[in-house]
Length: 252
Image 1 (cartoon, one colour):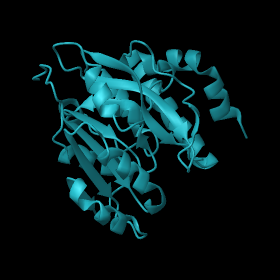
Image 2 (cartoon, rainbow, N blue to C red):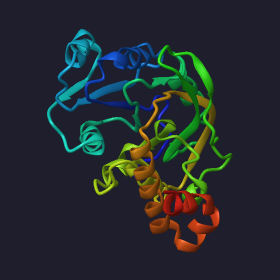
Image 3 (spheres, one colour):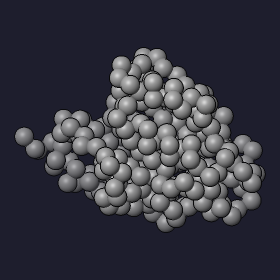
Image 4 (cartoon, rainbow, N blue to C red):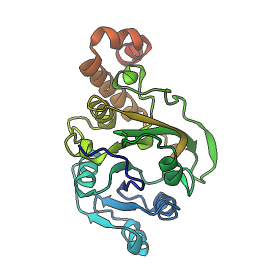
């Protein structure tokens, strides 16, 4: 892998949408208003039936790739985005989420010090409401030094604030057997292949606080538990997450 530090690495920002007209505009604007210019913007839409497509059309000249076709769900659409990307790094910015400020990508590049381009760039996540107001920082904060073993304790870095090298992503597509937590598994599999992960020490993402339904939340927790057992084994997972086991298996 050619990893020499490029003074202006290219970012591929991928937004996956489905009937997201109400929240998509802020996301698009946060990408196209970046002061850092070496950015490719990709939108993969699942054939929306609301005003999503006309909104995308309004910004067409700033969007490098637009796909609108039925897919097999969120992670299938993300895999399509990976295959379209040409940047050094990928970022998955969901509809409703935003890059934290207009110079977030510029600050990320300025934080790079090494002669080598790291395999992963990561940072912190702020939680916002529908109006875009700051609510709080994400409950789990990014560790000073991130490795694949860090996620034994849970997803310490938000998926959106985890920028992976495209070469790694292309050979590590999302596993479609997971409906809710394939991003958790994907980040671990990416990190297992990395040599250098770079903590930008920046707040990178404003994450829209959506109330996931209780049913999905429980299904998502079960998937995460399976993913942890797969990567870290039963004993470690139960030791780190005994509360998790109780909630999963004993709650009526």
